[in-house]
Image 1 (cartoon, rainbow over the protein chains, first blue to last red):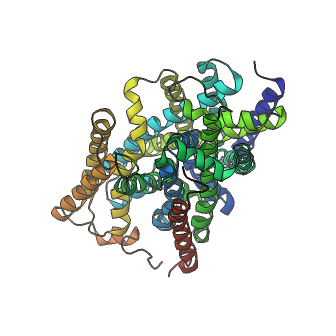
Image 2: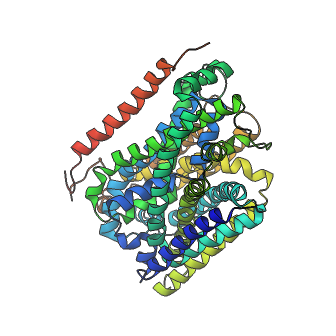
Length: 500
Length: 36
């Protein structure tokens, strides 16, 4: 059974989150407040929101698990994922922020609809694709949360999911992006402090970095190589496609890119790419080293992992249990693990709610809808998104697993080409954008299915899908009528930096 | 049996991280708010 001290600390943490939600709800006066926090996020809140939106439940569990299983060749993930935050701010953020402020956009779909002169088809397709991919990603997040809660409370899977789902939904529904970003500051702060504190202890307990590497080399010499020379994963060519998928795919994920609209000032984009990368890379590297240390401890019989199929995902929590026998400190770390897995979930739910209420309800079906009505629809859709994905996470259908693994790859193949071409190529047309998005979504889905269930390719499937999407954009754009130059000027389309 | 740290691996990985950090510092130095 759970210790009273642990229960007390976790409940206190949940109460703080609900309190932040209640405080944030007083700042919500209209849809703009709810969806983009009134474009008022300061430098640090914005930068930590960028990190935490990307830093998902997989960061602690999956990253240390991968380090545990395969060692150094997987370290490139720690370069590419933090770089996604910087890429998003530099390549998308600078322009989108400026255009959005000028034109009052609330979502990236507002931009796509305007840039491609397609208020219904482009907007609807982008929102629908965004909602589908976000929901799939959300199921993966809830699965990660339930691993932590089952470990923490020793309660059945469904109770753990319900508890987390109710808390996250409560503060997201009442406080919108204000609540999501401020709870993220608390969650991100806890995560940073916790990982920096725990990993050195774990490394020392495992005998130091030299010893850990010697043990890994003894298990398999490839574990201490920078990449693999054969096989289908972590070869240099695979790493190129893997890097493209993580850096660009996460950068254009709807729950990440929409954050750039909420920053208060453009000048934040000067230093936030470096700070987001540096902070996130340090955390990710430490978590991976914790996975290495865990491998040494398991090999030497100090830690025994549970006998489940995804045992490697438990290495971080098992490492904490081993390294910190003190119940108070251990309980604090339990909250940190929980914080990491909750911080992406709330942002995803809010993104689904915003895309449905603003892009589909207001801009396609009911243009006359009042602000009050949009807010209500947004809140109801957050609850429905939470309920639906919780239900699917309780008993994940077999077919869904490959979709969850494919989600980032499909985000890349669906959104990267229309966004980059839309922002930087004046020749990109409405028909080209629609074609590239459809080809990317359908091609990404089909290739992802083949890659995970039928046969692996020499590189990640998303590379082929994004090439197909780019070809569709170029060929169709060249064959169709050019976009009005007034629209191109109004949306600052063209070279990187445009005069005001 | 390898003794000590895998220095070659650390050198390759470290160079990549330093390269990216340097590029982001360069971005911060050239970025100007507004119209440049």
